[in-house]
Image (cartoon, rainbow over all chains, first blue to last red; front, side):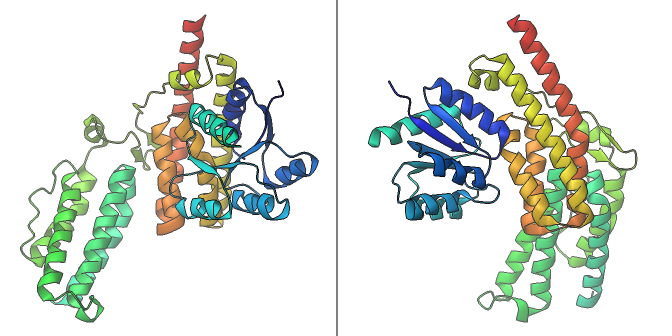
Length: 123
Length: 254
């Protein structure tokens, strides 16, 4: 069975390491990008089945990423955003631009796994 | 007492508060005290200059606000070992007299006595001796190990990343404090915040939240320097705690 491809866009290596580990254990083919430039490069090469992205990233924010995926790439792949508490305005922007779900920091890997599975099942 | 004299005394008191509060109080108390004082001052100004007051608040309303503010200030003062628990809010003169003694009272507070209170922050930093007084925060890595599904090597890697992030943050603050760049320090704080919360290091996380707040809202460089100092001093203690916890977990696992 083919593993679902997941792109994790997160500049915090500490969080990214834990999430990568758990997502891989959860059966996903995980790629990690630490900033917006890497995300764009990755998307140019191959489109994942789902994106999990932080909002605040260097070069290219999670908000810009959603806009890019929805409006330039014209893709409807699920996007789950990761946001810090107190960042409600950005979360609203993200939803307006087409984010499917959000999870707040500190991220519980178990919760993220459930949300990822739910979004993929919807599709 | 004339309003002008009252304001003069308040300004004097404010400068004295700024001088001692961050050095003698823990971070939360200093923050609370400062906010209470600012609220008191703002409302007092409204009282003295009715034109600045909101139109819908009459004389009685303003008095009520002032009284509530004073009560709030009194509440925050009571946190300080009840040293000025007898604060009298009946007259401005009495308040000012109390405030005049505030500095002396606070300066006489012993750090050791503060540490005896279980609910106080562990972050009491005495600049005069440049030493941090103990830290009772213990680090529990078991929840993180559980998230790592028992993989101790992954946990070790996370601890290393945690340390690296904290050191990078300390380096960034040293650079950006020189140029008083609130934005960059705020961004650096934001970046490290989730990791601190994830590793359940509450003391450092609390400092980072305050640093972020100061950078985004207060923009008080003196307070920011103090908080950054606190972080730099507290971090090695937390690091030792992390290493000890990691060693314990390794030994128990072995």
